[in-house]
Every structure is written in structure tokens, then in C-alpha cells.
Image (cartoon, rainbow, N blue to C red; front, side, top):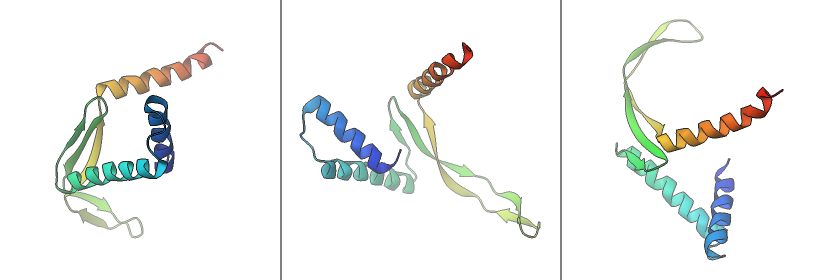
Length: 109
């Protein structure tokens, strides 16, 4: 799903529940603003928790040894912060239920 697909789906969802009150352009601004807020919070080393969806966190990777793929020489990779996403229990259960439902017709063959 692309950002354009997300905007389309959110606009359609709002239109179903509240009527055609928001344009796709305005919905795109909202989606962009949300994503910018997430990026800014992570840049400032803050965690973002969306109940029922998951948590965006910054995790610190340790210094490690790696290999240069061209030469095979060992190279030290410095410690650095990386963004990670941890899904909520509800989201994990929803995904697991969907994958089990998709797999069931195959098991009956």
C-alpha cells in the first residue's frame, strides 16, 4: 500500500461514516502531518505509542564487526540509533487471524 492508497482509503472511510466532508487533498495533508509528527518525535528520541496499533521506538544498536563485501576486510560498524516498530497485541492477533483464515482453504485440499 502506498501513501496515495492510504489517503484514498482514509478519505473513503470518512465519507462512509460522516459524509463527503473532507477532500482527498485535505486528507493527504492530514496523513502527511501525521507522518511528519512521527518522524519529528523519533528524531528527538521520543517513543510514540498508538493504543491498539503499536509503538514506534528508537533502539540503540551496539558497535559490531562486519566485513567489506568487496574485499572481505573486517570493518567496525559504529553504534547508532535505529527506529523500530512493535505491534500491539491487538494488531498481532488481527494479522494472525487473517493469515489463518487465508490458510484454511488450502488445508482442506
